[in-house]
Image 1: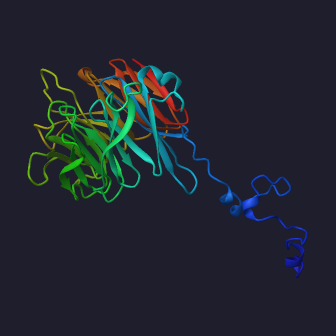
Image 2: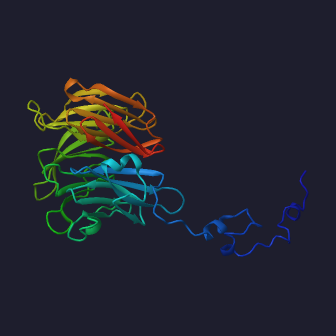
Length: 367
């Protein structure tokens, strides 16, 4: 039986008189730091490559932007860097062409024009940065200048796509169903099209075509996919597919196939939580043309088109598979345990895919 005066037995001894918390940083006589002591330590805010590599983008001049974030502890923040393609094999803080630290997480980076970088922050803001200018500094042309900044989403932006037919236009989406089309043709970042209730379920995917800057596709967790027309004065969409009666599908991501002579710019690929990829033709709505199982375990987290190749990525466990779209999605490359968590990818040429994530930060996949 425990003694009745246990509080006396386990009380702090009178000889334990540590100095104030602000003086404990270099004190070796009281090494067991409590919460107050840890909070009193000054945080290391120097630029560094954080553990979480969350987003990567490449422009036509083969210059890459990389977003890394600190996602631990009470304070989350991030930083984005710029590197040439040749520097990707030996990335460091010192050899970056540009870098900028943010007090919020940097969730997504996407190059719009070759010299304009769109940055989606964790506090719902979208920023447009000019990254290259010989006028501002001819000796060091890579320099950052804020072109515009706006916040129209009530929650952080989860999807960001640039229209490849017009790099001065982009569309963003957040998981709550908010959509916004952006225009960078002027000297600022302008919102030209807005919808606050695009889906009734959590929005999970967004894709833009190669030859049009007026259409885009969205999908949600409830198995619904919609085709949007940004030319309308008010948000306008048609149902591309709806699985609400059966509730068998739950979409996670989307990709718009490149144009071919036979198919045109009409094919859309949708990944789901069961590891499958579905093909749809926007000219034949409400009908799935083909379904291919990419992953036996884990959902399809991202789809990326490069000509005739479709790259599909998964998590839990992390994996990458590349299929040939003209051969009924026949696999040409597979890789398992790519990262502890795979977050984003880019195609650097016709046969090279680079993935980033947590754990093994960057990996090169050759077909």
